[in-house]
Image (cartoon, rainbow, N blue to C red):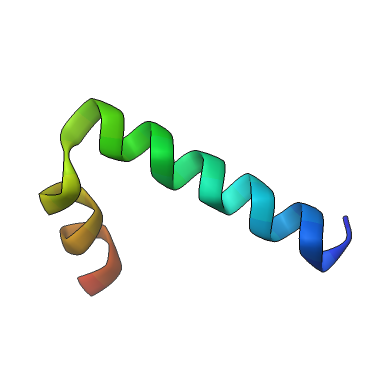
Length: 32
């Protein structure tokens, strides 16, 4: 996987998590 594709996949995952759980879940995930 190219770095660009990896970044795109990560952004997509973040969007999905944000849609499901909201921004607070992302903050918690980053802290761990």
